[in-house]
Image (cartoon, rainbow, N blue to C red; front, side, top):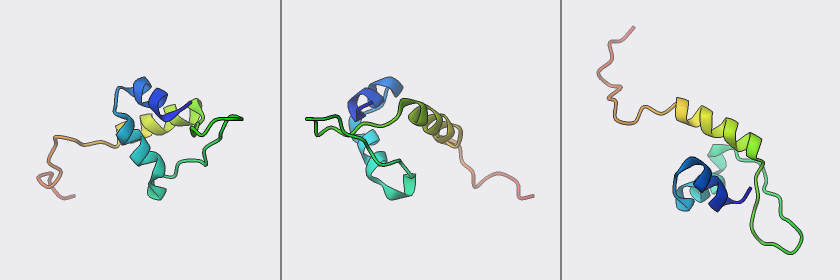
Length: 70
């Protein structure tokens, strides 16, 4: 699935998905290309798992520095 379609799938911008896809620290797989196309494509199953894991790790809006130390 192409970056614009992945962005649409999760309701985020193409810019964000492109930034994630090109950041080596995110660990995206190498893209595939259809014959005659220059648009990178990524496996949908992999992306769904990646996105679920990424969203589960988000703490947006919560201050983590105020949690009591264990």
